[in-house]
Length: 173
Image (cartoon, rainbow, N blue to C red):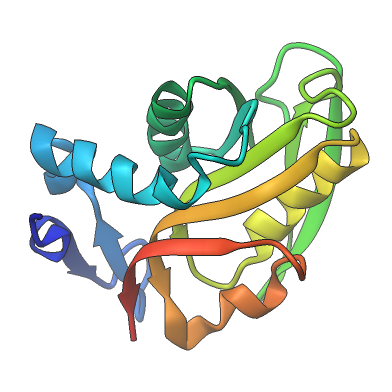
C-alpha cells in the first residue's frame, strides 16, 4: 500500500491568497497511485449495488469515471451552469461571498437508482450538498459519498445530507 499523501503537493496562495491548493496532478501521473486511490474510494461501496456514479466538475469527473468503471456503473457529470447541452435541473448554493450553482441533465438519474457521489476534495461541503440535492430531486437513492481528500478543519462533512455514509481516503487536519 503506497502512501498517497506523497503524490499530493501543496500550492500556497492558489487560486487566491490564503488558500493552500491540494494539487493532485502528481497522483494522476502515477498509474499505481491513481489505481490505489480509486480502489480505496470505492471499497466501502462495492457491495451497495451502485448503478450510477455522479462526479462533480472538474476533478470529480476523473475520479467519478474511474470509480464508475471499477464498480461497473454508469457515470453522470454535474457541471457548472450552461455547460450541459440538454434540459437541466439546477441547484444554487452559498459561497463565503455570494452564490454559485451546479446542474445536471434532467433525465440523468431514474427514480430509485442507487447512486455514489464522488469528488476529489471535501472542503466546505456546499458543492457536494448541492449535487446531492439534484440527485434527490430526480428520485435517486444516494448510497454513499466518496472523496480522495477531506480538509477536516473546514467541517464540510457537517453540511452533507445526514444518514449517508461519507468516506474520504486522505484526511488533512
